[in-house]
Length: 249
Image (cartoon, rainbow, N blue to C red; front, side):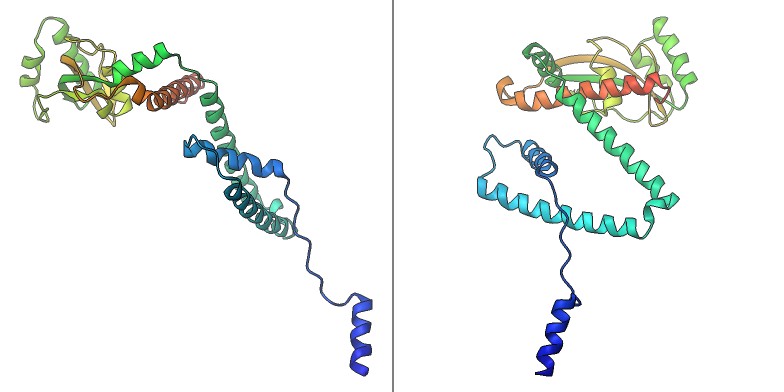
């Protein structure tokens, strides 16, 4: 009897711990995550309703857990800690940077003509002659000799410690972007207009010959990949121009 009275007293007095209410998460916070997941999957079919609902539940749970920990961090005063505040600024900056990149990509709409030009470029193979230099000055002096009529072959023979270059056709897609951008603009017989720097080394190129890749798939088969490549390249170009505007090349 005494135990029953004691239990009743605890219940009516509110001394028994009650589970805290989980943070509320709006659907508007979950929907963009699901949309992003579906966009990255590149699947033509929509996610089954059952799978979507299960994913929504898991995302909500994860966000609720994050909110709980965030609230506890604020209670602990971490939002006033200078190191934490600076780290948050860094995360915020990177987040908005990534969002801007995605914004650029969404607003780049290549035409079929754009994609056909890219198709030709992707399927182009070149046979290169290459001269390598330790300094820009050395490369510039060599370029002057070429402009005065010296053959590229004789130039390479006159240079010490030149790495062997296979005398074969290769796709320009095999080169790093910094080099491919230059080589893609060069026609057969063309020599690079100026020394090209890559990872602290300076290069001069001559396109000895060109041809279309014999293993190139049909345009329509490659069109989705070409679209992605075009969008990535154009967004990269816009970003580089922006960096150049601020002196951040």
